[in-house]
Length: 404
Image 1 (spheres, rainbow, N blue to C red):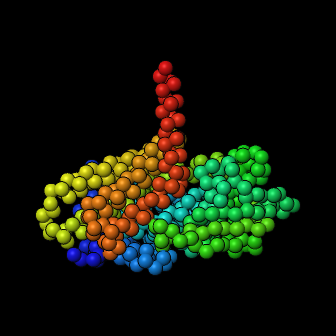
Image 2: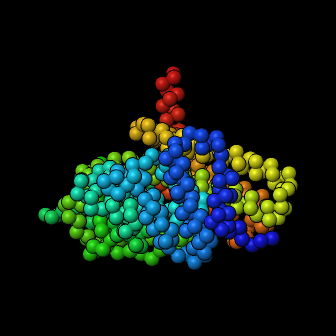
Image 3: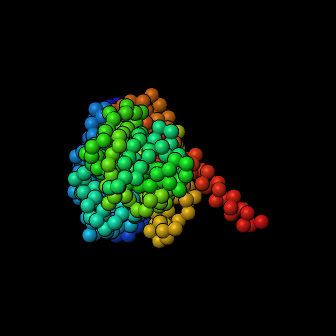
């Protein structure tokens, strides 16, 4: 059996096109199809061929992210005057899905650029937007969203990083952990508290530059998956933050987080669908190498189930992203349902693909076990799937009360 499922760019494009589903594509606009095609071409030539080596070497996927950014794909959700293209959430979801199918770690770095820029778009002043967003969209600077702390993960109201008022602005002291691209971030959107006794009412956002005095960065963690995406600690030791780098209003950081997670959960959900597609496609390629054009019935039946589940995930992802385009007040439960279902799909599809391949599923060269390792963290970040189930359950209970 061939030890690798790597395809040359033309083969990759043909193969991915063959796996497209008319039922999912029928609602896409012409522009969204063009965005997907442009993304897929970059993935085929610049990202997918390098993904296996990046996983082995843990090298940062700079070239792939730069290729996406320089093609204008980093600014899909942003206005033209800031370097964006003003595209739909569906176009963005399609892009992350395509990148994740080629290399999940590259998709994580790519989407973190948006995650950093989007809170500045939401709450920033005109000067803050002009100063920081274009460089993030173009890839000229890497960004990080600094929320998680050693003792505060999904519960943002428990933040310990403290911002103390000074005559010129604020002094920031604390520690952040599990920060994507934290080791090389030039722009950091940091959430801190101005009063630890006030919980979420004291959470405040700041734009911090990675080169400022008092900012230090830890070495990237060794992780189970997403090897090419660096994850590190950030330390703030009495960092002077000028008054003009307060993001939004004092004590309104919680609102910024809640509005921003709509986009970040679309990102995670798109990764889940992309990883499921990658696991399915790599398993299919491996089975073709094993059996030729006539795959045994047992494996064919399992692939049929997997294909159906992936189609369901794509339909859910695209439908909720479209809902966000049409109605900015989509409930947290609808967003949570998408995030939970699609990221669970990514992990479960990878587990099934490994099972289908038997002993071959464990081979590094096939890339299926990499899907399994990469998919696990998508169930954890951007709000754990347990948190998503809690949000879904709360909305279900409210609906029941309205019916009684």
